[in-house]
Length: 444
Image 1 (cartoon, helix red, strand yellow):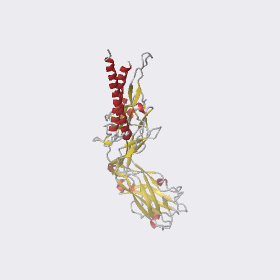
Image 2 (image 1 turned 90 degrees about the vertical axis):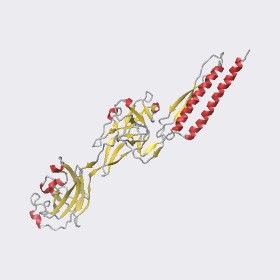
Image 3 (image 1 turned 45 degrees about the horizontal axis):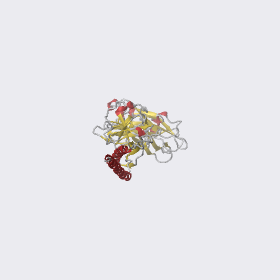
Image 4 (image 1 turned 30 degrees about the vertical axis):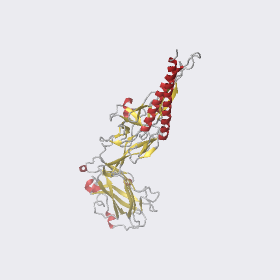
């Protein structure tokens, strides 16, 4: 009977609009939840087919809640380097515990990037999930696989102690005065026995450069030069002071000649190879440095000004640049748009420690919602693919920002009024059908 089906339709309307009210309430409650994706309550008609003799039979309505996971939320600045937003496709990979078993059941996916360091140094978001990343070795390399979760590990920064960096390059820009008179000591100069490093020969020019050993110690390397009787050539020595810090004679680490062209530029053909190639500094064992320290001396290329020159102006050091640093403690971390987590030390050193992947899906809207604004993989979503941000369709990471909720409060309040009216109308269906049934019962 149509009256009975009307009652059923009215009840289904109450149930559907109650579901819609719950969806709207959830959206409004999460208007300020980081990375929250709005859910829509969609209605689907239920149709009962009957013969024309029996009349029409109402089927009612069924609610379907669908979360718009692919909607991009506005990125809002926070000022915290560990707040991470995603511009484009992809999800952070997180886990509920700091142990990664490599099983798909042990990981979840989220765009809620409000990560902070916990008391163990792990990066966790407001939902309590641990951020996962590929560890980076000392050479800046990492092992990645788009489907292998065992290569990931929780991002932990508290185990980073202080660090030092040994010098590997020294650039020297200096001028040797071309009109310098040849010293009487030049006639008896010998790099092995009568040299500038020992102090028995007075150099025409000398300058000191500070370098750093592998333990962060500050060492002094001197470049001393004595004009040769051969035109456009200078005797040169690189030597360390105090000399006892190295195994070389009188602290020497390189000796030979430095030559110039008639134009005052470096003559690389006639300059000793010791000054053009990498130099190994052999520190004494008492310093605790057991391996030689290679340093490349950059004194110019000879085809242009810069480096060492010989012009008729006073001999002087114009500039010097040395890489490396003394010991420093961790002062903070940074994350670039490609997902590299960089440890920053107070001595100026920056070191890559993790590479964050972004997980992409064929159908992100098919993911299953979980506690803490995270998602789990389902058959509808398809399998994940781990990608470096900015590569193969993955979005970019924006440090110091958070993705805002996609909820529009004005729209939700409008839907709230519509749902309230629809719910009230469904109650009228039930009361009207009830009155009609009551009339039917009164028939004699």
